[in-house]
Length: 139
Image (cartoon, rainbow, N blue to C red):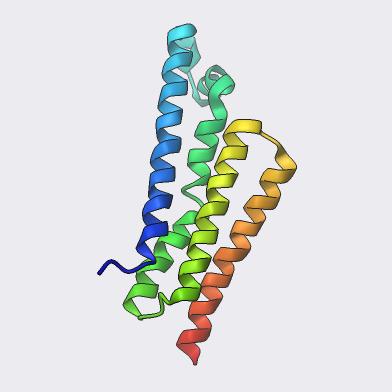
């Protein structure tokens, strides 16, 4: 039987691949519509300027490898210590849903305030997951 904690983890990985696919499609389209010159890639700043019209998917992909690393580290620990209980699974789904909403806002509407609120909420949920593990291990 597959531990329930793995399903939100698989969905988070699918989100990351979806954002990566979005990045590839957007950058390919940008390159096709605006063929780059050698000067567009002289240095990092020039490349960033060149890709600025399609930068949000790249920024979001990078963001999905920052705080979510703590989620991906936590899941095996929860499984190894037999603490991947129903409460942790609910929190995992909430975390993944918030990360998906964050990606939608980040790449789509680009509204900073709602995006920050969702980001902060996802961090609080992830903190609660880690705190829950710590409390369970201490008890």
